[in-house]
Structure formats: C-alpha cells, structure tokens
Image 1: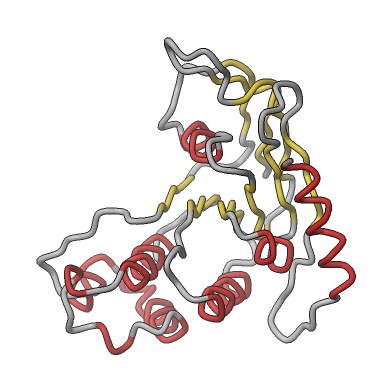
Image 2 (image 1 turned 90 degrees about the vertical axis):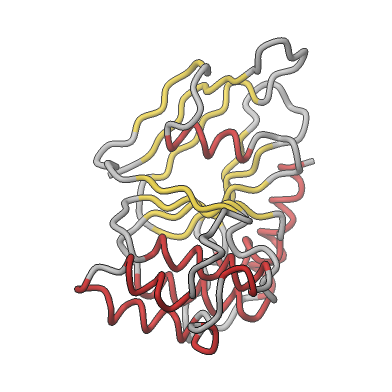
Length: 231
C-alpha cells in the first residue's frame, strides 16, 4: 500500500500564479507523517486533491490499496443541538465502543459527555471531531489542523496514543508547528514557499513513540532541514 504524487500541478481559473507546480512525493509505508509549509503554499489544496474533493489539476496521483481516505479539518461543523455523549453513542459501531471510551479518556473529554457541542471551546470541538474520524474505517486520515486550539501537552499525548493504536494506518498531519512535526512525525513533506519547480522536499522526523526520549540533536537537525526547505 502506498500513496504517490508525480508532477502535480494546480492553478485556479483566472489566477496569475500556480498553487504548486511539479509537486512529487511518496508515502510508502504506514505511519504518522506531516505536510508542512507556510500559509498559502497549497497544503489544504493538496489534501483535497488526495481525497478527491478537488479536481482540475494535472499530474498523477496513485494510491495502491488505499480505498478509504478521510479528511478531518479545523473548525468542522458539528451538531450544536446534540449532547456529546449521545452523538458519540449514535455514531459508534458496537465493536468500537471500547476504543471510543479509551479515546475519550486520552483526549480528556470524559467530563464533557453531557454538554452540547455549542457549549464547547474550539479545542474541545476539534478533539471530539477527530475522535469521530478515528472510530471509522480508513487507510489514510488527513488531519488538517485537526488539533488547533489544543494545548501542546494534550496534542502530544493524543498523537502518541494515535500512533500506538493505529500503527498500520497512514496519517498526514497538516501543521505550522515545526517543533511538533520534527518531534512526532516519521516523514515531513515540506512545501517550499514560492518555488515553482519541484516544490516538495521530504525530511525525516524523529518519530517519537510512547516511552521514548527525544534525541535533541536529531530534532534540531530535522528542524533546520524543514525550515531550509520551506524558505
């Protein structure tokens, strides 16, 4: 199973500039990977191309064995009239109730089950929304700023647990946080700001797992590579 892009080029109608041009990369094995780059470089557009929501591009995108691709994003609309607990009970397959309860605990959501979505903070809404996706079947889950407005320690705890529980799945985490992606991700696909040719560079991250201590020198090296590639 893999996901590969070859020479993807996107330019919106009537626009003067390309969103990206001749973009190529490959995700050849499961893991928690990142898509990184400055605002406006095309990260969300690329995510929507991968999931089939955006057409009108040229180039080749292949995903051998990847039949189910999901896209979770920041501030996704939720049913504001419903209580969190009732909604999660309704959408959870019976075989995944144990997984749901485990994620509720890890995500720090147990005290919110009786509240309505409209009463929650943005960070709480994003955590619950991500949990909903993790209860579905998928080969690839794109997380487009899915943990925005969540504090750093909680984000790290959530990501480490996702990596523990979904070791055979593919993830593409879109983030602006170079410290976070260099520390937690296996590979970081960096989209270079303003470069028209070959705009994607792949950098190896530290891929931290539960119980492991970070190698600071390795992380600093990864951060430097990421920033150089994105500038």
